[in-house]
Structures are given as C-alpha cells and as structure tokens.
Length: 473
Length: 128
Image (cartoon, rainbow over all chains, first blue to last red; front, side, top):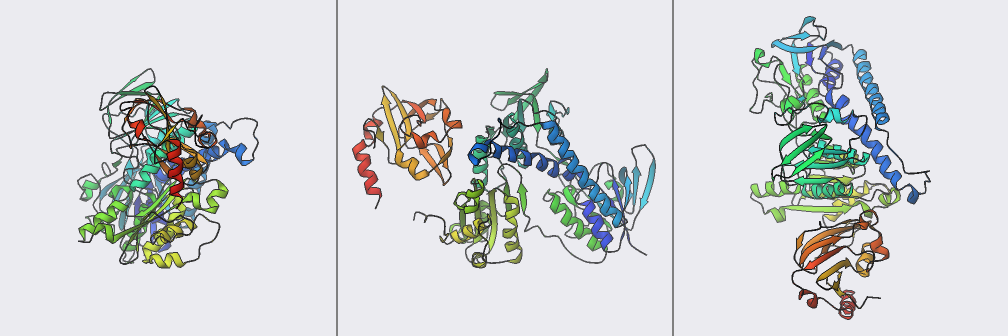
C-alpha cells in the first residue's frame, strides 16, 4: 500500500513537498488554513514583484523622451489597478497549484491543523467542523508569522505589515519603514516609486545589513536617489497614533511622522499552537522546530521544513527542504545542503547573491589560519562598462566575485543591477560544481548580454577584465 | 580654459572665495573624465567638514567618484538644482554646476590650493 504523507501547510515548502511525494508514489494529504502557495505566493514574493515590475517600467518611462518615446505628459500610477493586476497574477498561480495537485491526486483539506500525535493531525475548518487526518508520516510546513511586537501593535491601517502594504489602494503621502532588510528595502523601492516620502529606520549600521558591504553601500545610494531618507544605527522607541498619523520617536529623541508605519522586523516561527508539544517535538531557543539534515524532527516520522525550522527563510530553501523530507520518508535517503543558496532582493535595482560576503570570506580564511589578505581575491565589474547595459539603459550596478586564491574556486558572488537575481545562477552553478575561476573565465559568454559582466568580474580577479581600465597599483 | 579667479585642489575640485564663504565644485577636467553625470550625493547643510574629507560622490554613466572638500568649515548651502539635473555639472562645471558653499573655519587653507596656472601644470604632469 502507498505511504500516506500528511503535509501541514501549502506554502512553497509544503506544496512542492506534496508534488514530489506524489511523484514518488505516495498518497498525499495537504492541510491548509488559508491559500495554496502560502505567504510567498499570496502576500510576499509574487505580489511584491508584480507591483515592483510596474515601478521599474515607470522608472523607465521617466526617461521616455530621452529614449524616444513621446508621451502626452508624465506617466502616473493607479495603485488600485496595480493591485488588481497583482491579485489576478496571484489567483492564476494559486489555480496552477490546484491544477497540479489535482493531476497528482493530492488531497487538500481546508482548515487549521494541529498535531494530536506523531501520526495524527486534527483539522478544524473555517465552519468549525472537525476531522482527523491519519498518516504514516507528517511534514510540518507552517512557515513564519507576521511581525507581532508589543511595542509596534499592528492595526492594519496606520501600523501595518507588508501584507497590508501590498494591498493598499492608494499610496500614502508619507511612510516610515522600520527595518531596512530585504522586505523593507523592497517596500521602500515600491513606495518611493509611487511618490510616497519614505523614511527608513534600521538598527544595524547599514541597509541590507546581511549583504556584502559594497552591496549595502550601493543600495544606500540608490535609495537616496529615489528620495528615501535612511536612519541607520537607531530604532523606534515609541509610537503614537493620532488622527491617522503615526508619530515615531527615535532613540535620539527626534521624531518622525507619517500616515503609515510599515513594520518590517520581527517575523516569528509558526511553531506554537500546532500541537508540536503533543507529538513531543523539540523546539529550539528561538521557537524554531529542531530538525536534522534529513529534515526529520526529534520525533521519528515527523519532519519539518521551511521558515518554521529557522534556517534560511527563503521560499526556494523551503522547497528544497520539502523535497529532501519526502524523499527520505519514501526511502530515498538524501540530505540538505546550505552552502549554495542563491537569493534575490527585488529592490530597484535588483540584488542577486550567493555564498559568502567578502568579510565572511576573509574571516573564514583567518579562522583557518590563513592570511585573510592573501587567501581571498576579489574581482569587480561595473554594469556601465557592458555594451548591453548601455544599450538598454540599465547602467547602474556591479558584479563582485570573491574567490579562494589557492584553489581558484568561487566563495561568493554579489550582483546589483538589472536582472541580478537571474544572473546570479551562473555563479551558483560554479560554486555547486566547484568550477574554477579560470574555467569560468574561459567559457565563452554571449555578446551582448549582462552575463558578460560576471565573466569580466572573474577576469578582474587577475586584473584581466577587458573592458575595464587597469587598476591603480 | 581654466578660470583664473578660482583655486584648485589635486582631487579636481575648485573653490571660489567670497569673503569667508567658499563655493566648491568639480573642474572641467573632472567632469570630462567622469562622462555623463547621473547622480550627485552631497552633504547636508549644516555639516561640519574638514579639508581633504569625503563630502559626497558623483556617479556618472562610467564610474562613481568621491568629492573631497578642499577647505574646512560648515556647509551653508547645497545646490539642490543638481538633484534633478546633475548633468548641469557637465555643461557648466564652474557656474551652475557648483555643489556646496562652505563657511570657512580655516580661511588660510585657500592659499594652499593651486592657482589656475598651477592646476594647468598639474594636469599636464598627470598626462604622463
């Protein structure tokens, strides 16, 4: 008889796990309280990209006359229509998952699921009816929660999360964004594009504080170009809402005012109230579900994937973890690896990254007892020097590669600029396969493409980029 | 033609002195080397700066370059018109392309800067 797998949550972790499990012959039941596709598809990655793509076009239209497009006047945004289009895109993708589920005979149970024991999930549907799902194995894919910090009470109107921000029908005159991480910077790009006066507040000393320092510096400048005001190294101590205006007091006592405060910090793990304790599943210090490299929790037969396990909180990592979990359940032993995780930040301009930052690479070299200056080489190449970038007008940006000087392998790559998140995959493949930098430089790259920038950055490791003036010695 | 009423810094900034106020911009040579300028990041009015310090950046379609202040003092004005029209620095580097005005705290520093003739010789020496 087929193995029955119950998957709790249909986000990018859960739905991918479900399809892979069905492909491998399992009988699959997915329990989802809200919408197929989870946060990523319904309120995160896809919605924000749908909206940001319009701003990208609008940015280009600002240069219409230079480009030779004659418009009767400046282009204007209709956010309500943008949101309606976004909703259509989302609906089509959600339907696409439903179609795939149908094709693979995957059962969907609508409702809120809680583990009763290691083989049973009790589901309460929205109408209050209850049922139980029995399975040979369970995969928990409940994701993460929206920010819920006591000092920033989300009211959904004045103090909002990105979920509400992506569904506004009119751009507020002013917006404060708390947190200049990935989501904060993407929302800053979006709303500054719409004409909102955006002010960001970030506790760390830089925007995108987890990225390579050069990426942070470049992004700070790009945000400034968009008219975004950034306060780093501080935070909001106090908020007060009056007459639809939020007043935020910073650490130094200064105050900011805006019609909206977007809280872009403090996501939690959806590990509470899912019955983990009934099954005896151990949680980590931060509330994440503890798993091994096969994605199994401390309870045999119960697996967990995605944001709730607190590794890289990325949709594509959740999907990868989901495949690993069900493959292990179904007798195909495999383990998850986190060394090569390409990721995109869909700011304007975009960021693509994989592997270590320069600082991390040098620190690692030092920890290995090597001279961090000698052990690591860095190559750079600017978009502006690419024929393709000049032709399309996408001249802002940088390719940066970080290599091990001895082995010649790639340790990290960081791209800022048009299509950066797509372009990063060549670097990711090089890391995955252990390709050396001479191999990458030797491979013929098509002209004219932005991908030539990666090749030139790799050539720059040895000061041999063709379209770059020799570095000062 | 290098204006003779200005003083020049070896990072290619110029200074126009008016009483204790110095207007600062970048030279024709600098704008020409940079190419089409697309963005200028300038300090805020009120910023206290000291000579040789980085006070901003100029981004062109080719590169990004640092703006250094040749003089010390307090920034009293910035050329806000450059925010929307940075290309003015290309077309009129010594005039409408001015960047900041600094109230000098060490006026004698201006005397240390190059004269037009000295700057011309400096540029010639840089060619080799």
